[in-house]
Image 1 (cartoon, one colour):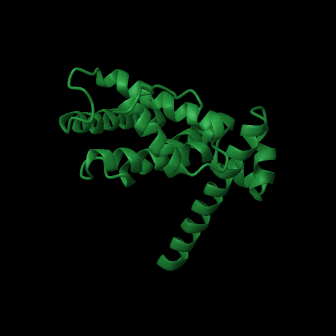
Image 2 (cartoon, rainbow, N blue to C red):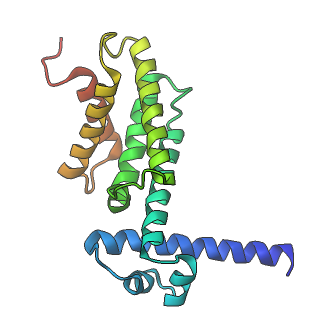
Image 3 (tube, rainbow, N blue to C red):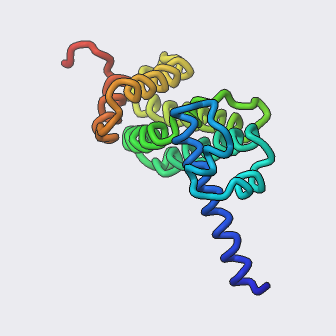
Amino acid sequence: MGETAARSLRADAERSVRAVLEAAERVLAEDPGASMEQIAAAAGVARTTIHRRFANRQALIEALASSAARQLAQAVDDGRPDTAPPLVAMHRITANVLQVKSAWAFALGLPADPDGEAAALHQDIARRCTDVLKRAQADRLIDEAADLDWVRRVYYALIGESLHGNADGADPDVLAARIIDTLLHGAGPRA
């Protein structure tokens, strides 16, 4: 088999895995007990394809959680957390994260295997979030005495609440602006 043919087969395999993971998100969000066969049907692949790619249902679930966590990590990266001005990074990251979290709500809500890839990615995302908050604190956007772990947890809660409230059709940039404004200024009167 030539290099081009092998590359084409890998691309086909990646597309079928992506189709299965996207179908798994849709199907399992509606019915967490759905079978591998139901997921294969929704993905438009043969039952044997899904079983060849994933040894069992748990392997599929773990792959789904890891894929969603990788997309979340990429959403953070795309916000340039280390180089963009902190306020710009916070806004971009928030808008990006809202899009990923709304598209992959089921997968991102799964309990992570503490030794798995998804848990490691979530820990790295939390560390990077705290780093951006430290930069914001250095720029005096956040009080110097603020507990940044608490600020990060409040930030996560604001994202979660915005997704539960009116995420369908809401502009991620508008929601991000509201989240960042609430995080930095609370609900108190403006000067």
